[in-house]
Image 1 (cartoon, rainbow, N blue to C red):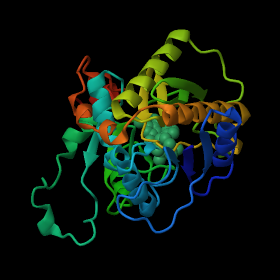
Image 2: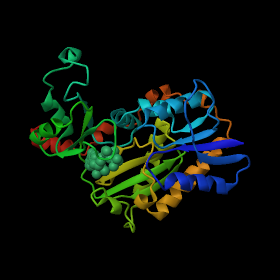
Image 3: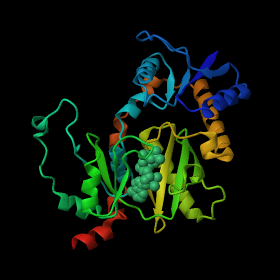
Image 4: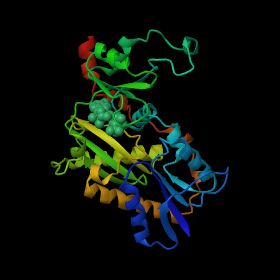
Length: 332
Ligand SMILES: Nc1ncnc2c1ncn2[C@@H]1O[C@H](COP(=O)(O)OP(=O)(O)OP(=O)(O)O)[C@@H](O)[C@H]1O
Ligand SMILES: [Mg+2]
């Protein structure tokens, strides 16, 4: 018997539906369940062929368990080694090398010294920063947001240097990025499963939480949807994520990728709605079964040095939506 397990946190609808769907598929020799674990011995096989991880970003104990499980031959969705190493600034940089449009982005030093560090730990740092150069590159409006994290925590829209400094003052020891704002009307959130299947959802980030997944979306240009589909897949393949959401904000017909580090994406029935829920439960169930039946050896597959060799078809950084604004406001 090959077991498929799921590790999850507070969510209530997706894990149960996934287990039920996999078991309904009645694939020979496959059974799904909630993972049940206690004290984990080093190098001990987990007993699972596949584990779907929904929560280890919040619970280091689970991350440790999952990395140990990989050693014993468990395929983990998503790769816990890469997930732990990844950050949004690297993602934007990689996207720009891959020719996927992303807004211009810089990474900023922590506003406050991280715990147990002092001025003396920061002697490599240029001080003060050349803010004029940063503003000329990014322009206003801009978004100040963490290089890692989610749930709109510490995401600030700023319209001027003064607003930026006020927001930056509130970010403590977080590592922040500053990014050109995309002035969008259309916004898409896309599930990407198995680095292959893409499900594009019209999303309205400005609506109240329960109305964000647009129920009756307007007709959309087929070429735009095709580009969104292709770019979402390109990003997930480069990053090696088997389950992710990629978010695009569209300005002047160009879909800018603005958030694609979501390896445990929202999949709650009450949030995404019945049709999207049905899609994601099916797609992940099929992927998990396919992986459980495959010959894949995770200790061989989980390498990420190849990400750093991304080919460079287009200098996407020149596509920043903030460019014109920057030139205007800085006189450049
Ligand atoms: N460059 C940008 N241009 C326009 N809007 C942006 C930009 N960056 C972020 N936003 C807005 O802020 C929201 C949150 O940003 P982002 O998705 O990067 O953060 P998050 O914390 O990962 O949020 P979530 O968990 O909802 O995905 C986006 O949905 C979008 O509305
Ligand atoms: Mg987001």
